[in-house]
Amino acid sequence: EIVLTQSPATLSLSPGKRATLSCRASQSVSNYLAWYQQKAGQAPRLLIYDASNRATGIPARFSGGGSGTDFTLTISSLEPEDIAVYYCQQRSIWPWTFGQGSKVEIK
Amino acid sequence: QVHLQESGPGLVKPSETLSLTCPVSGGSISSYYWSWIRQPPGKGLEWIGYMFHTGGTNYNPSLKSRVTISVDTSKNHFSLKLASVTAADTAVYYCARIPVGLIGMVDSWGQGILVTVSS
View 1 (cartoon, one colour):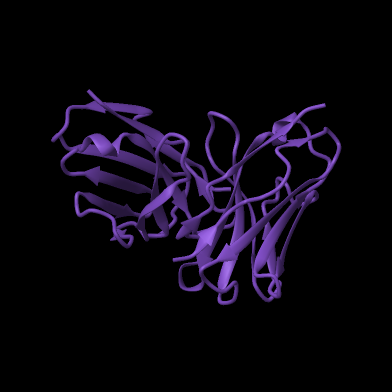
View 2 (cartoon, rainbow over the protein chains, first blue to last red):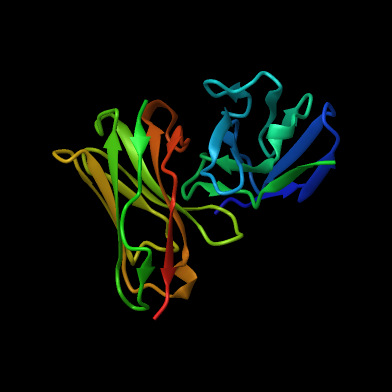
């Protein structure tokens, strides 16, 4: 199965700063990569699909990029409500798999 | 706006079968794929499997011998059965909707139900 490796494990930034999260796949997933946000005690929420498409209702400060094996999720200006764990997920080959998550904290 | 809500026992004994149901409200169960995903406490997410409303299924190879996912279109709900559970199956179980045009992407999640395997 495809292994997704996320970095960093934890990112601590001040409000208003730019946050960049990475996701690397063990083999090419083309652009079939999604990003989800999971706040404490909640189900995940879809942010980005197919590498760069924002899901309905997602603020413009969230953007995704990359293709093949290397992907990024960028939060252009961190808001306090962005505290969460962020997961990447590939839908290129079954079983679809998630990364282990990157935790974003507010400094 | 579709609403999903997992239901079932929160405690299952080792070697027994875990059974969960997910009623779909605010939308039809037709024209979508339906999935189960789990998350052990403090850990990451794992796909269990998915099926189309007409019956085709696909299960994670790591669980395939123990899993059954089914859809009841007359009741507008879908279900999960996981047999011969052990403590390693303790997790929050999510039911989820997958759009047909973007298979493999979850656009709607249930709130999740914690199932503990313990005697």
